[in-house]
Image (tube, rainbow, N blue to C red; front, side, top):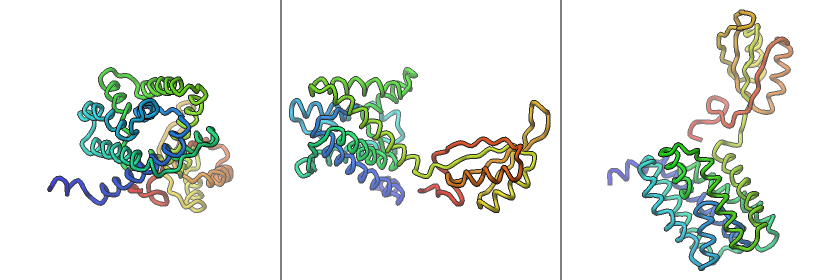
Length: 288
């Protein structure tokens, strides 16, 4: 009982609610757009859909049963909290898939629209599950096991297995075109996951090599209201002492930063790159 109370902190409860909401959205996306038109999926979900098509087995229960031996395999490679959230996410997703199946209206129109919206909706659901600290289970667990034991790249394994499952599913459905639609669904799903996990507020990171660090820093802080960090450096070609300024600005502020640099030191050297998330003053809080 004490262990349960220690685990169920406000942050943990919030994460489980996120996982539950994500599982609900994922299940709706699959039931509305993917299952009715037999668009293949990778991993355990894809195998479950094929078994449902061939033998009318319930998708959720099948997915949960197929994941059980994988949970046993992956327990020793996951932390306790991560393992619990993964099992919870898979279990809740499975319940929603079977419980909502009789009530969710199926879309049976254009397959391209199903692939597009299915990928977006399921990706949104998966993204919330990942934000809550869970995973989709399935082949991800095998990939981590092989990476640890055989040093096999996780991405390579997942891509290979999913490609085989999608191709075999298309052959079983007797519709090779569905494999092409599955690629669209997979791409959009991955994109949505990235947006939700890594944030929608991608910013710009600037490294500025300048001989006028005081002037440039003052202008940035006055006009953009962002902090600047100075890093001592040395130009190896000339041997001159330089200063590298580092600052983060919002995307729409990048143009103003260029103007500032042109006005203060037109001979400066600047690297301007994209970053997915920024935590700190004037940006996101760590708990967001």
